[in-house]
Every structure is written in C-alpha cells, then in structure tokens.
Image 1 (cartoon, rainbow, N blue to C red):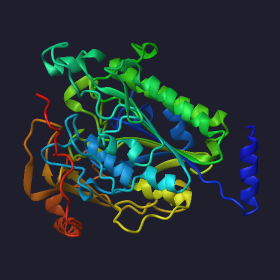
Image 2 (image 1 turned 90 degrees about the vertical axis):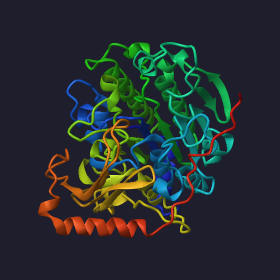
Image 3 (image 1 turned 45 degrees about the vertical axis):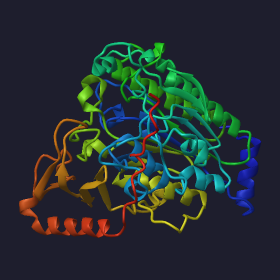
Image 4 (image 1 turned 45 degrees about the horizontal axis):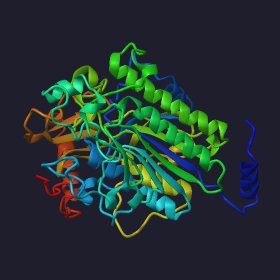
Length: 465
C-alpha cells in the first residue's frame, strides 16, 4: 500500500525516537444488536461480509460485555469506564433518559473523548447519544469537537395523532413522520422527524467525511459512530430494502455492515488503517418482544433489559492491522475496558482521582498477555442482579426480557458455569456451595466499596401545558 508523506515522516521520526505516532480510534456502536445477529457470530441468513472480514483479519471476542442491559447506563459505562451506579446514570424507575429528562451525564465525569482531546486528539461523535439532550450534556460538552445525530432513541417523541393509535403497531409498521425526534449538529436542531430510512447512510457519510479530513492533519483522532439501528422502529435505505433473506431486520443489519465496510475502506484509502484501532460492538442485546424486528441473542438466554447473558454479552470485533493480533479471544472484556485501553495505547495516563471499573486490554489486542478482567457485575437499574467470576455466574435476582415479568429474588442464588452452559439452562448451585459463597462474598465486597450518588435519570423538565 502506498504510504502518504505524513505516514512516512511519522514512521521515520518514530524510528529515530523523536516522535511516537499515537493510534487513531474508531468505535462503531450499534443499538440493540443481538449476539447472534452477525454471520461471523452464527446467523445463518444475515450476510455481514465486511464484519466477517474484520473478524478474520482482527479479533472476534466471544465474552465481551456491555456495561448495562439498556441504552443510557450502557453508554455512560462506555464513555467513562465506570459502572453507571458510580455516577448516577441508572435508575430503577426510569431506566433511560427521555425527551422530558432534565439531566444527563454529569460534567464532572471524564469521558473518553475528553481524556483523548486533552492528549491531542481530534474528536467527533456521530449518531445516537442518549446521555442528555440539554446543551450542557450533549457531546460537545463532553470532549467532542463536533456532533451530528439524534440525542436519544428513535422511538421517542411520538407525535400524537399520527399513524396507528396502538404504539406497538406504529413500531412494527413505522413511518418516520410518527416521531418528532430531532436531528442535530453540535447544539443546533437541523430538523425534526428526519427520514429515518437514511439515518445509517447519513451517519456513514459524516463519519467518512471526518476521517478524510483527519487524514490531512498531523493530530490523531477518535471517532464515535453510534448507530440508531437496529433499535425499533427499524429502517433501511432504498438500496437495502428487501435485500436480505432475513426480512426487514436483516436489511437493517446488512446496511450497518455496508457502513462498516465504508469506514474500513476509507481508512485504507487514506493510509490510516495501520495506525487505527476499530472496535465494533453494541450497547445491549436484542429487544425480543418485537419478534422479527428485535433480533436474536443466538445461543444465549434472553435479551435487552435482562441480566441473563443475552442482555449484556455482545458480538464484538476489534480490528487494526498495525496493532491487533488476529484470532478468536475467549477471555473476558467489556465496554468498560475501552477507556483504559485507548488511553494505554495512546500513552495517556489514566486519571487518578476516581475509581475505574475497567482495565487495559492492550496486551490481549497485541497478543502479548491475558485480559485483566476476571469478573463482571450485572446491574438492573440500581440493583445488582448477578455477578460473574471466571466461568461462574451467580444470579441473585432474575427478570425476563424488558417488560412483563416481575423480578424474582432467589433465596439461594442461581449458579451457572458459562463455559459448559452459555445458555444458562442448568443451575448447579446445589453442587457447588463453596463457589456460591465465594461469589456472594465478592459481590458484597464490591457493593460495600462505594456509596451510589443520586440518580441523574429522575429529574424532569417542566411541562408546557
């Protein structure tokens, strides 16, 4: 591949010990993508050739977790490297932010964008934010130089008097004009009720434009591309409508795969591929009550909103020819680890004034060492429902799917060995009381180590009646 003059200069300076090129970072974050929705993770009829190639050339992570099982707390975990319970970005009553929410991610939090920006990075956020839509909580207040996208979920701001009276029917047979969601640039609203058929395509154009602009700059960059899809209502542009063997949902996933291909192609053509790390993952599992519009967790149990594996274990691919040792990674990882991983790769010191819930995966990415993660805590709102240590996972409380079943607290917690039983079918607590006791103690120690702050999700804006 022909190298740009800038790449040659940077490489030469690095070899002379005068300058060390920092890697660029791209996070491609889906919304409600199931563990089983990609062909490289086992889907038999959805074709994802670009992600399949990324997985072959890079790393496919089989035990990678989101920070939570619903949108807002999950995104807070990714952005801060901290469990949402530490910064008030979770609640038992309002589990995500809504258009009438008055608050968002506290400005006292150090986001990944803010930390990288202070280290000399150009930063851009494209797509769904969902960490606060008021100006003081938008991406431009949290370290991003620019923002283009919608500030919360695409099913919010339903317009009264449009479409079917039944909300579910509107979601299953959607039209963009049913929702008054704002499309924004920085802090300004460009339009209301944008054509959602073109969101994936518009996001991709913005992301590609940003990468091309950065190819002419000397500074490294961080791009956060957070797709609105496949969160219901699901839309695909004309070129992808009816193109998949898996119906409307398949069309949406295959367009996301096309988008991934455009990002990688742009990086290659700009001679940036060898100095860029790309992470593809999702905020939580599939929204199962929407059936064929809600995706699949594959071999895993349940989906979005639950702390079963299907709610938080995500299909994850890490790609970067200059940094990533190809292979399948079975060790534990989480979106909580991306903050310390990127700072480690960039040579930026982790802030020492707060507790982080992740560790650097840089040794695993490079094929030089094990993952620092040996546990995972599964919160449902403000309550700890489960804990994983090694191959064992202990459930204190279970609740199926996003709505419907009431939480079921277990007098004797349920224990599963996820190596033998990733579908969590066979409770082995009676056979391993010592493991149950050890995991109970581990959870108690964790919960005793901090006092949760007041939730940011409960404050509401005044009503305009």
